[in-house]
Length: 251
Ligand code: MLT
Image 1 (spheres, helix red, strand yellow):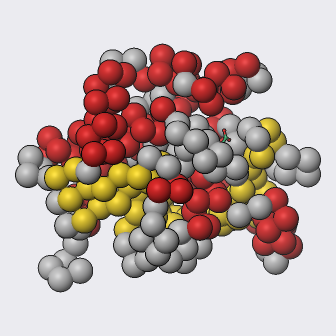
Image 2: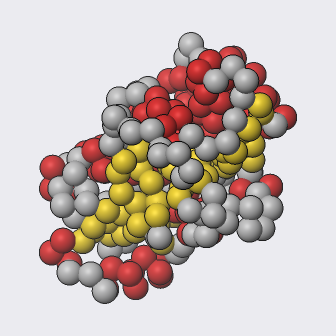
Image 3: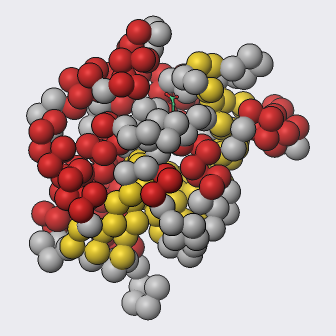
């Protein structure tokens, strides 16, 4: 297996995602919150590139079964049912609902990579489930991309990507990694014993804490507590649940 990590969305060459399975990493908070939403029974999530697009997508849905969620610049938006705090997505009222979701980095990147065969959403809460899923898929080449923060590097996404690479390396000792993946594994080794502390010191974590969203950091640090894999296929996010059957030969 060859793992290629892109630490910033801008590093991803045009059309690189086309036809591939891509792992998208956004710990704070999109990938964490969407995993929690699917675990709470949400039927599907539709990522939207902007607030306007989200509102437009919602208009086409039966409002009784649809919710509008997300943030811009970290804050819940006027007229939205939910923001982007994991706790908001834990509600039983989400069961069976379609959620239209927009966010500053994560959702935008999802809509940019629509030509991928599949996007797999990674955060600390579902890391082992994603690892198991990827091994079951059996791809020889794996692309990972960090959502970052408005085009800039995010420490928490790099550490999470490094943790997944380390997890894969332990199971596939012959796996090869590009330099960004190797660097991310070094970052992970510096933080592996204190993920809650990492989320306190990283820039976006500090922003969320200073704006009254410190509980979201605690939720995002709960390693392997959501054993499902959100996958984006044809513009819709649904859950792949373990156990994952090995991919048939030739797929
Ligand atoms: C994003 O997608 O940009 C994030 O999830 C930002 C956030 O809500 O903290």
